[in-house]
Image (cartoon, each protein chain N blue to C red):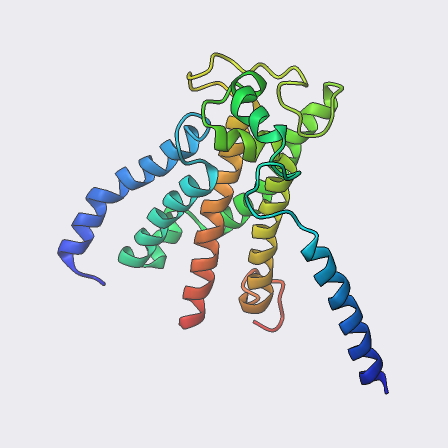
Length: 97
Length: 141
């Protein structure tokens, strides 16, 4: 019974998503909301906004600094996960080593 | 892996590889590259040293504990750089808008916080690579 309800719900959600996709503008067409003034601002305003010559670095570390901040915590989490799985208690505190 | 020719060649080449990695990190705001690519070059040079000369001598050069410390404080350093904006009365991670001097474009000190953040993230990426590698090497023993 729960399976049938789940299937019906999934089909409904899928239909809604398909309707939404059919409303999307054509890929690469110039009047989409994604083709707005942000890219132009990056191209023309990077030097004045950040003083960095490398536009990629300016976008990654200045305009989108939050993104890179969380990206570094992703790396940190990866190392923590590897430590949790592989690290033996070699620091003197662990008992299982 | 304990070949004489290999050891001498690696000893000749590795300093330049490390220098290249640090150069890419320090010039991340001027030329192509940046923290992630430069950090990976630096980390790979340390990994190559550990592979060719053995992890015991690698531990003498740069200890695993120091690597773990750099790894842990890299993200904190980024957050601390973000606090500069708040301390100066602007929003978190703000660079020029917070009044950080951005310097002459093209010179080594330019871009304000970008250079400092790139340095921290680059060292963090390098230590991440080395820490993961050493951890997996230990498991084989």
